[in-house]
Image (cartoon, rainbow, N blue to C red; front, side):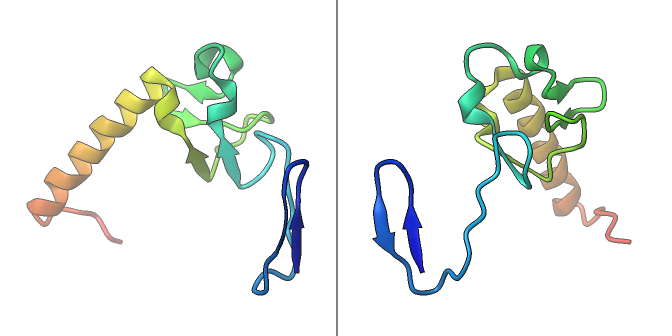
Length: 95
């Protein structure tokens, strides 16, 4: 296959099809593009539910570069610490 964008053209043998989605509309939400103001102001972060959102209000399955937003980065670090503590204690709910 071949991968092209405005600056690059390269041959990639293992990729048969590449689909590019607009920011905030696909499975991977690239949040680094929204650094001009906090994600909450863009409507891309629900602090009450602690969820990163797509433009349509659905939950982003993958939030790429979440660390660019201070509030989201703090939330993820807290969740990570809680997860690690539960894991160490063997108290993860895997059901």
